[in-house]
Length: 316
Image 1 (tube, rainbow, N blue to C red):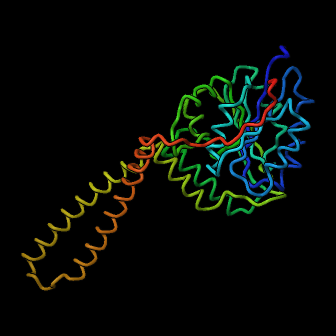
Image 2 (tube, rainbow, N blue to C red):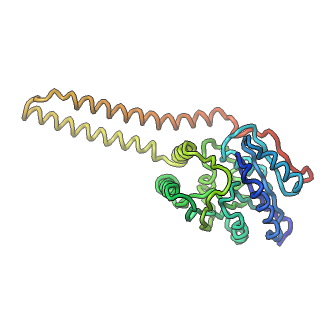
Image 3 (cartoon, rainbow, N blue to C red):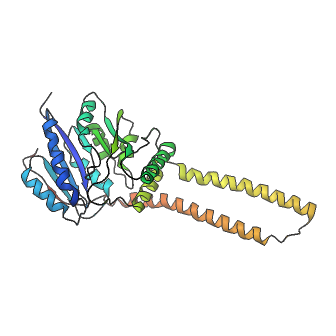
């Protein structure tokens, strides 16, 4: 095997100071098992304010030939951090992993072996979690919805730990889509893939920044970006309501002819006005989500802004 191959790993960093002294040595240790490969670690500091950048610089001074640091001007989000990392990565194959060490980094060795057989995408799928059952059930429900209504055959456990071929990276780098989900985007390109199931570990240090509002936004972004379901649901709902309104109107006419207009019907009117008012607001909200994303694309504002790239000028 050629000794000139490069294996890059992109690691988004946001408030991970409590994890980095464990994460960085563990990832650097992979070089011992990467026979015939040069390891490249790309840490993208996504606007951290907790000292993460200082820790990254400390390790860079010791391992200049293996570490690249990309510092963004502010917190643009995990997806943007991964996007910029993929643009900088030089690897023949590129891994993506979180900095919290909940994913088994040693699995990259098995992923590379599968990549060497011609597989373009190797997915580490969360088959289970060492976390409270509530989170696991909610996660599987959300990804099940994505599988059913947005992207066929998408892993039911979801994934954010994977290895991708340079060809896929080049394709992703040519797509400048906003409000997207990088992992669904990679999967939707249709390349040959294999899945390696694993149990996601419980976080041992630091605090997760993956808050519930961020999860809701991601869920909405996925369905707006990758599915026609919301807008089609509006059309179907309109058709159903039209049919029900026709049936109700016919019933009222028949009832009036047979029994006369005994009831003034104020309750019915109030209920119908409230119901249809709610439906209209929901409909406008869904349409507004689509329009906002169109506006966001048209404005061409950058997904991220790089403040500094710290790397060995002599190259890897």
